[in-house]
Length: 294
Image (cartoon, rainbow, N blue to C red):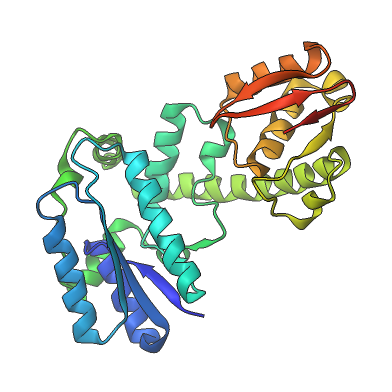
């Protein structure tokens, strides 16, 4: 199975490429996404492409003109759409160059945005591998590796712009000691274990609530409907209801904020039979006497 390395040309991803090239050059493919958000983006793409030619590594790329005003979230979404496309094309697994300092940054950003306890468990997507995290690399370890191995890389000028929240957080976190960052990582890993246990319980509970046999397949076709029992939502604790309803909605690719979840729960409890409740992405739920259908 091919290992799809997400390589931007920056120091982190070029170190990732060097590690895998020395270990298993015949089993890797480089995927590069050009956001088209700055003039130097084409130079980055050419740099990575030439590196792959020199190393005789397969190279896949995509270029979009997202523009300078694109949000971080939209740029990330487009990038991962491309990576998943490449992974499906080659039946491979995506590998990114995230490291432990990236994890700390993500926790800080999630807490600022009020994402709740899940914000303490970044990088939870099992479909994406992050070997630098597994190796225990902080940014200083990457800088040291690049210096020792004379790794050439490109500099992204937007990494130094105060226009992006992550950059502002990164600057503030430089004041944190290594011990403090290690403690945060330890708490993240502990929280991840708890999250896995909660997700397992969610699956067991939802298996009892959902009428459709399709739920047992783990993956639900977004075009098919899901029907779940209403009585559970009349008597359970609100915190439990939020967790279970969130889990059910995500099976239909519907991500709800906490206020949206609260509104949905209220509708389930109070709406008259067969009344509809509007959901994001032009989707809706039909609240029946005994069941709710998504």
